[in-house]
Length: 200
Image (cartoon, rainbow, N blue to C red; front, side, top):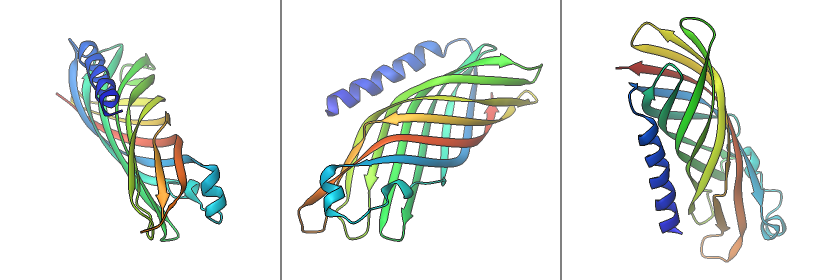
């Protein structure tokens, strides 16, 4: 499985590198909110009384950093994102994303553009709940994003966007020193965000 993860990441980065030629560079920072959809295994439903894993990462603060290249038609970029939250001081999850993306631009004027595109990469899901053994898994992610980009002079731009991602990351839930209670699967993530970019 590790070889497959490495191959997927290498392929993603290769696509990013090939598409990112003859364009202006940019780096940026994003901040927003994420909500995850978590599926529980049948065993976990039987062994835990109504665990609210869907409510752990729900409208939770999410930060990201990105870098890439932009043309008049679109942009290619690589993004790292991090979000973690808890529910009732007992359940805690952390999600980290590494994704390569492409956005196509639709101009609304000289300095304003709508964008829409697709992303692919990896998601790391960490189960860090109090009273349970920690567990981590890395899975694939695919997603789509759309939003609006406003240029602020030659070297800065701001944007607002929405992103939807699907993933297959899964972690186990086990009591400390006890047997496995079941597993949770990260099905999807919804995210709204604001971004600030510096162009050079």
